Amino acid sequence: MSDEEFMFDDGDEEYAFEYEEEGESDELTIESKYYNAKTQRDDFPVALAEFQAVVSEDEQNGRSDWGFKATKQILKMYLKQTDSADNQQKILEYYDRMLDFVSKSIVTRNYAEKSVNNMLERVSLGAASSFTRVFYQKTLDVLKQTKNDRLWLRTSLRLGRLQLEQRQFQHLEKLLAELRLSCLDDAGNIIHERGTQLLEINALYLGMYVEQEETRKLKVTYLESVSVRSAIPHPRIMGFIRECGGKMYMNERNWESAQVNFFDAFKNYDEAGSPQRVQMLKYLVLASMLSETEVNPLSSPEAMSYEGDPDIIAMTSLVKAYENQNVTEFERILHDNKAAILDDPFVARYIGDLRRTFRMQALHSAVAPYTRIRIDMLGRRLKIEPAEVEELLVGLILDKRLRASIDQEKGILLLHQETSDETQYEAVSGWATGLEAMVRQAFAVLS
Image 1: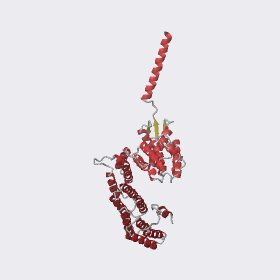
Image 2 (image 1 turned 180 degrees about the vertical axis):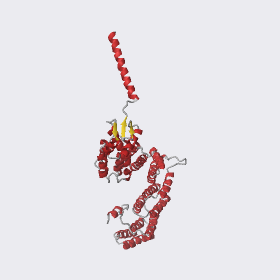
Image 3 (image 1 turned 30 degrees about the horizontal axis):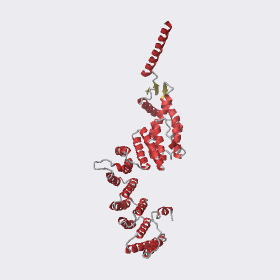
Image 4 (image 1 turned 135 degrees about the vertical axis):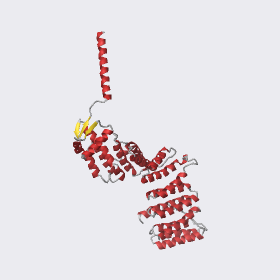
């Protein structure tokens, strides 16, 4: 038996030990036939015939959980077969029979829920999207009919995650609109008790808007999500919401807000035990460097335990080169750690911004000791073309981070050293205070 078969094999099946009493011989006979059929599962035709015999006998005896179990085993066997149209039709046929047991409460509610979830998990692993949609819709129809609202919601959200993964945005939007209505009252206000449910729905909306690059809708949904106070969401859901918020603010070049959101996303993913926490740390480091903060983003107790992760080691080395304004080392780390840094599409999108921020900082420090310096010399120091140096200098001057002017004809940067009005005022004020003290001292001597 393969690992996959072991993982899914009857984990949802209920077992019971019963003593034989008068009148139970028929049930014991069907039970022994069921277990005998299970031993034949490696031989599809033989096992199928024996399980079908169990189903037929169960129908003659008035239907019981043995018929349900046999139907479920036939369904599992067909799910392992080739993905042909005939096979899919058989799957749907036996799934209808299985759901009929559920709708008529022939098996316990708990056992039915576990069995349905097991089947949904199997179908979600690789079936065609159209077939999966039909399979899920059959499930949802029966759950609505039996008024199993909790499982209906969980199944709808599971379908939504699958549609997001398969980029079926048209179907996803229709599903989410229906789910969202269940969280609002007649006036369109959020029902207090359904705040957690709304956040799970909004997380799917956010995932869709990120993929579609719908920035306006993304921001509206994000701001609504973080304003919900009547919810206790799973930390994985809150982590995803904060991750989307961080990406949204990065797109707006609001590095400080992105930094806050990525740190919150990291903490939530860390609490949930999700591997996404390492990726959030990478994004946190990226946002921190872009915001030019002096605080080490990995200095928090939660983050320090991941400093040994290979991806984080690469980002930590990049931070050190950034802080030391070591241009050669900065570029070497980017080149040597391509898999850990540049292969992440989100990080790669902002490497241009990071290089510009890094070079502007290095350039600002490089010109500090001079009153005038050649632009081509700065280019050699930063290992970039003079034209790019000039562009960076213009940015520093316009941002008022550098008091200077550029002599383009001679290719020279002229730094202005004249004292500012505020400094002149402070100097005159100090001189006046000193003079006043001298006058008082003179009067004291004369008196």
